[in-house]
Image 1 (tube, helix red, strand yellow):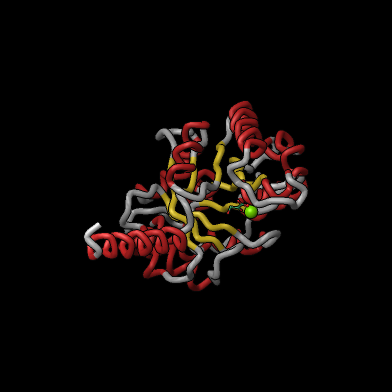
Image 2 (cartoon, helix red, strand yellow; image 1 turned 135 degrees about the vertical axis):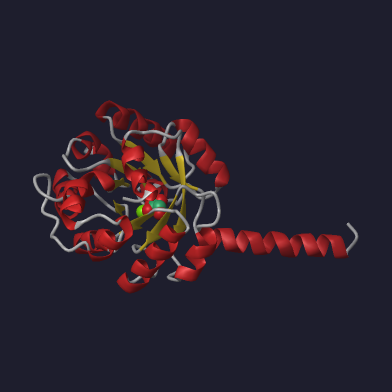
Amino acid sequence: MQAIDEFSARLKRREGGGAISAWVGTPDPLLVSHLAQEAFDAVVLDMQHGMWDLPSFAAATATSRLAGKPVIGRIPVGDFASASRMLDAGASGIIAPMINSVADAKALAIATKYPPIGERSWGPSFALNHTGLAAGDYLKAANELTVAIAMIETRAALEAIDDILGVEGIDGIFIGPSDLSIALSNGASLSPNAPEVDKALHHAVARTKVHGKIACAFAGDGERAGEMLKFGFHLTIAGAESNQIRAGARSAIATARRIASGA
Ligand code: 3PY
Ligand code: MG
């Protein structure tokens, strides 16, 4: 087993004072290679709104792992078949969007955990290469080496949060503040930093603590990510790569213009 494979177990023990993960939707392993050089604890490859397919996901997972960064995959809504395929490709965890009920949470656990917890089908092709484990050892370790994380981003999910957290095989929750803000405002606004979202975030951290599981949340930038860690989240995001790239470019152009104008 590689040192990188201790990431999920450490996260489950809630060690390390709060992880920050990169978030990548652009389906290019070479882009992941650059981001993985930065001081991120992990890299999320987003197949829900990002443009990854399975071959590009598998290649980016290998690239990220080469830089010492574990990969967590976000599946499209309800695409639990892709969850086990991402784990087969070597992902250390799965984030599943729109988990609104115990039935949804059980479907996630079934796809991602081997028996006796779930029914993940055998075939960890690249996961064996990456972990260096023999097949039998991987079978014994895999449920511990990977995390299954349920997204809470609707009113129904908030109401069912304790039941979802109580499902065996669900290691934690991940708050999607954008969808949650749309749900809480009945579609009136996209306001991920609104006070009612903050209230839900605090509630989620408190309920997760009671269940001894992991609390994760998306943040749109570094400032919001810092707040999330202060709220008590165990893993957060400091913005998507598209925004980080554009912000970097904007800042470089503005600096050049300011210096050229003598301001
Ligand atoms: C949300 O904020 O709704 C998310 O899904 C984060 O990507
Ligand atoms: Mg969402």
